[in-house]
Image (cartoon, rainbow, N blue to C red; front, side, top):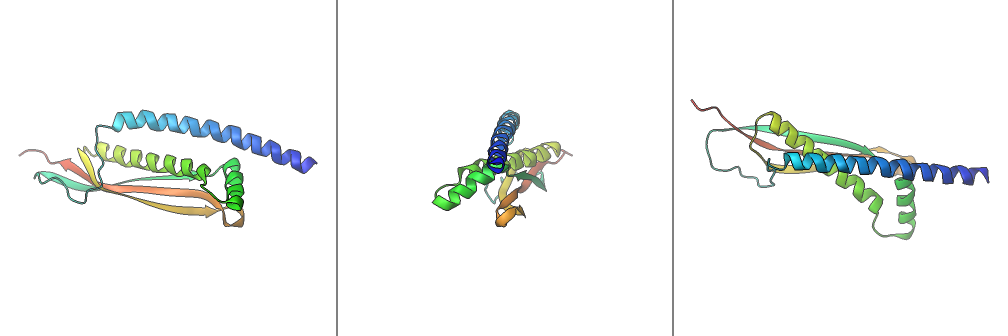
Length: 150
């Protein structure tokens, strides 16, 4: 009985703190996306044909850990099948955060755009039973930086 109560308390705490952290992170993402919206990041492999630009590799990396409640929900979903929505929001946050970090690095370099944007995703730690513990998303691209006029 005590074990069941402990499990329920841990699930409730995981749910509460996980939802709070996720909402706070999404608010931060939305605010920064609005600030960096003017800096385009496109998937095209080819830069604009305009001369007088330098190119620089820019990256943004994010590691997000799965909270206890999401891990529990994913385990249940694995039993019954279907979409694992608890991990979808985790990956969405990691992708958006990585893109923002890449764009911020490009802005720091004075770039006017980032092209050839790509993502890499990796599970970097395993939980019990080889479940996902943390996921890393790397966004990278080529920043287009205007060269000073001579």
